[in-house]
Image 1 (cartoon, rainbow, N blue to C red):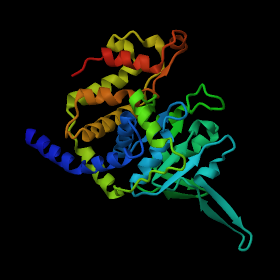
Image 2: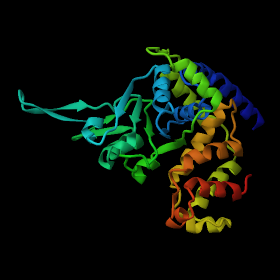
Image 3: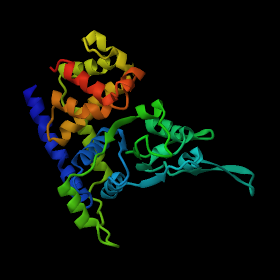
Image 4: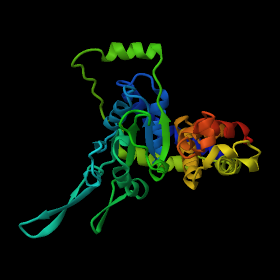
Length: 329
């Protein structure tokens, strides 16, 4: 087993070489935001969609655009607005009066990287148009079903739900995002660098494509081979089940949780932990990898109760309690 892990370590170091080039190219535009960039790469490596939440002006959109420019893939940005229709996203049938037939016009969803900008500014009927695409990597228009390109990744941004003119995302939509990231303000040093770099009218910093889709697909195969011990697999199951039945783990949170995490949480937490270990240059997963990435996988899957809201608790508070009290292998 030690020999196998050593071989996986070597493979990880070899296949993760492109990560350095990619982060270096992104760093030409984005100052700081290590957490954001690292989690975007986890989503890319784990084949999981990512939802970015934060107040306006924190470079959410710019980070996604910069990532797409550094990867040699097709990229479409969809600006979600209150008057957007599902057909504007996935495509529609158009009647041709010359021959009396309907022809398919594909929407902007047909690309490798999709930026769903301010996704919560469109009503639920538009957000739900993404459900089939995000889960099954296909789109149905009329009677025909079309496969989406590989890799296919939805990177969505949203403002906090308290902001004016926003709609809450349906639970089915939220559950399809592997990660939900909370983006915070930069520190003083970073903001000064942002000011020096960006506070110049007309200045444009270009990003060159440094990674090919083949590099990403090959890295994903390596991520799948990253070793995860049975104890860590059981630890992930315990964490997810503790969100559904905290009493069985002697955690005083039963009244605080309305709905626990779905089975997708177990799957995504496993894959994301492997991808995170890959980014650290390791061929094996540690319990700390699970704890580090766990909040991003679980924060949007645990629905808190009215009692928790009355106590001014968030899903993050409840999840942190679970991480603190579930025994670590």
